[in-house]
Image 1: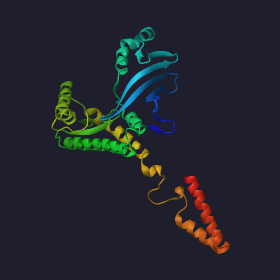
Image 2 (image 1 turned 90 degrees about the vertical axis):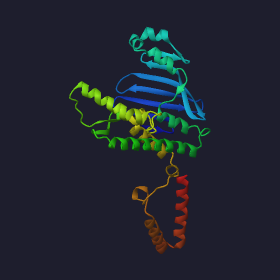
Image 3 (image 1 turned 180 degrees about the vertical axis):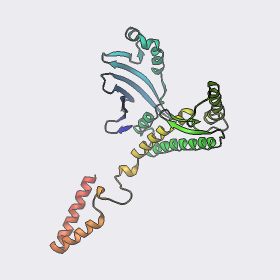
Length: 289
């Protein structure tokens, strides 16, 4: 994920496709641009959103959707163009595309966490900077605490279960598992569901971990995203402060500067050294600002 604050956009890249979310906070809309790498296919969706402060939430609804080439609209002005879809795309019609579009042209909760965090950062009238950082930190701690509870419970299992991770996210399962039969595989799935997924990820459970099954699966990616937003909004980073020992990458060490001034004072006089010090300080403040 790339955060482009100048362009007010979120950019996602992989080997298959590019996805860009362009935000327009003044009118509370955003555009999603999707393209397949090395192909001339483009899809664009335009959404409007609203931000509520109590409780804090972001809702969205689709107002326009089209693909190209050729240019074909699916939604205009928040209305699903059923006649166009039926005429142009029989396959998508069979896959239930019209029904799916009818759901997202209505107001619904924004589920894309990265987009949620970015939109909230663009509305200081809803969340102050301190409130925003607190929101991110609470989300981060919620995930970390939930994962700790899950891992602690799984470690108590005596059948060999582990918290594993693959390209689909985290899961509770057996490492290098090869079932002897379909019956055994089904039995183990039921065991994990009954003893771990239901008690750990259902809110009504006494052993609820504080996170949902989807949050657990996506926790690694979500923690990475939260870390990016916390780093982006860090007061230390914005102030341009350098933590730790200064190195040649960040300018000369202070002792080199002091010795240089002493040498100049010895050979050319104290006032020449003072003049260089004043000029250097002025230039530093000018370029720092």
